[in-house]
Length: 394
Ligand code: PLP
Image (cartoon, rainbow, N blue to C red):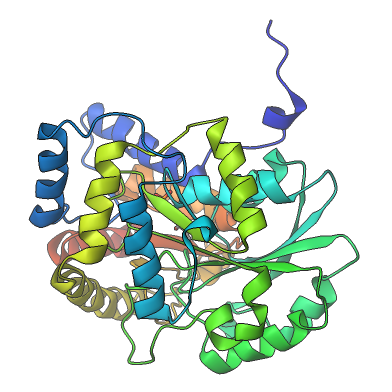
């Protein structure tokens, strides 16, 4: 029997990927399953982006690149950050990685020592706590409620900070809740952080472009430029440009930290795929009309899903500001129905009895809720929600 490391025994596989796999298994066994578990847009990668990659491939751009990304892609990222976010960075403050996931992984490994604490508001993206643990850090989970629209208050942030706190993680709009912090709320959180100069903050802006409200995008360093020297901006092309399989994400921040993250990456994956970098550059530099089209579809589906979920007995769902997720509470359903004890049992029930795959909220640190991804057609969503309603009423 192979003895595994404490490190790997300490973490769990990604629950969202697990749901997707389980749905695929049932489908392969002949069952009619609607998968609303996956966190990726249903659209094809836009043509001009694919064309750039094909062109790069045919021109022999198939070798190692600089570990931290091609100069051309880094320039495109710098211009994006300047144009969209009014943030200025030099090339040595940018690291291109194999997806947003590797960016955060590099950050954890470059920043944390054993026992260092990372403040993570729940509901959180499933991977943050486990990536912190891989780096021997300690996730400090701040629980938020639906009544507070799943947003951490300044008081909660302050109460979570200790001598050991190294990092606070913000993700807005959020996976899984879809809610975004307002400018004023970010200023209030920044006011707390100003008191703790040793604490860094990571802002995961992966869903920056997928927003339904008129309020302009804002993150903590845009709200409080004073935090520039201790903010790491994380972003990528996966969600905005429907490029999840290309694996390109990027980080921008203090040169020393970015350099350390690059060193970690140089001893793991080296550079992200050469042709994927060319595609990402085309995404950032090309027309943004494709993004607007996708967001329009997500917005329509959002409205339909929120309305329809709230028509189901015992289900309560707040509207999202962005992303392609709804995060309804099924707590009343769970409390009033003997068939399921918790959200995990409910997810199992809905998969087996309704043929709909959702991710239980406990995967995101929010038991009682479920994450529904509406990155699929309205017809399929209608079918899925009818199935859920009928299975619960049966
Ligand atoms: N950050 C958030 C909040 C996400 O939801 C995801 C993907 O699910 C990522 C980062 C990572 O994206 P990727 O590694 O696919 O670029």
